[in-house]
Amino acid sequence: MGLQAYRTVLGLRDVRNVLLLGLVVRVPLWAANVVLVLHVVSHLGRSYGAAGLLTAVATVALAVSGPWRGRRLDQVGLRRALTPSLVVLAACWSVAPFVGYWPLLALAGVAGLFVVPSFSIVRQALIHAVPDGQRTAALAVDAVVIEISFMIGPALGVLLASYWSTPQALLACEFASIAGGVLIWLVDPPLRAARPGADAEPDPSGRGRAGLDWVNAAVLAVLAACVGATIVLTGTDVAVVAALRDMGHQSWIGWELALWGFGSAVGGLLYGALHRSIRAGVLLGLLAATTFPLALSTNPVSLAALLVVAGLFCAPTLTATVDTLSRVTPENVRGEALGWHGSALTAGGALGAPLAGVAVDHWGWPAGFIAPACVSLLAALALLTVTSPSKQPRPDVPAAV
Image 1: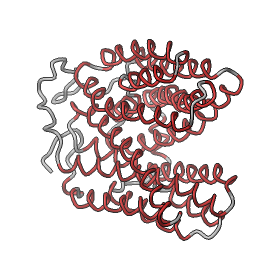
Image 2: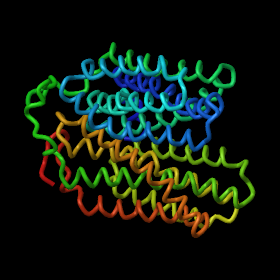
Image 3: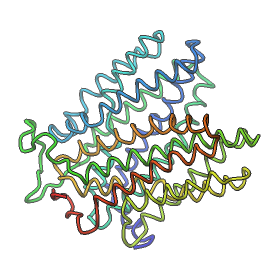
Image 4: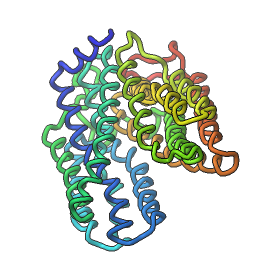
């Protein structure tokens, strides 16, 4: 397939439109996260601990909302699912930047429950927009776009907070994200195929699907892999900071993490260009295996080189979990399935940092790489045990695994 896969995928107008929509929504979202911390610390005069509590509340709300918002997409369609979100978000963020800490905490929690499920929408729309053989390439491009948005968003948030007051910057970022949600509502990209044997229209009653009957061992293994992947990623974040501080090169933290992100983007592009996809369990195992050597770094240069190598498997692993999950779940519950995927990533992110922190405190910074990598390796083995090429169902066809 090679680079021709990207030319083919990006040659589709629907794909380009969906990727642009994702960028428009995600950049202000990342920017708002940074501005929110600055707002709590500088404008409200609270501690970083208070800012962390606010982030934790928003994270829990986001994890809860993922499956719920995804289920609404499946049941009532995009526009009817997004309308309440847009109304609640506009009401919350028109007030939140101008209130005290505790009202802000409550409003951020409510807003987190009604957040626009942009990641799920973009991925569903991409899966729908391309033939089955190009699905991996499309999801790999989206992974690279996420990396780009993450590079732009925080820098933009800091820039706005430098020139404006943090309430103004927070208001601008949040309403820019809401405007992106409105744009998605207007474009209304199709999320499901309209073909014989497929559900062309959402079912408002939710009939035709029985609770979580679509959940099987393969689905649980993929979700466990998602948790394992983000455990090792957030754990590596913490361990890199601890390692460079111990080496006396704290000023190198930013660009070393940037090199890690560069490796991830390159890996995502290479993965999407492959002639055949690699199983998610294999990629997660490689991500864990390439994280272990980071504990052997003797200086910042060797750490940077090993981070680039480990980064090569970050985006491919996350892309493969989305790809695998979309193939082992029926199409009429894909929104909810991807919602659970997002919640699994959030859960792993919440577990990875404390795990690495405890390991660093007890055994030094090398353990900050080793402990999360061990957990991820176990998740990889679980995924490889439960899923195999012979057990992979045809796309969009539920199967007993």
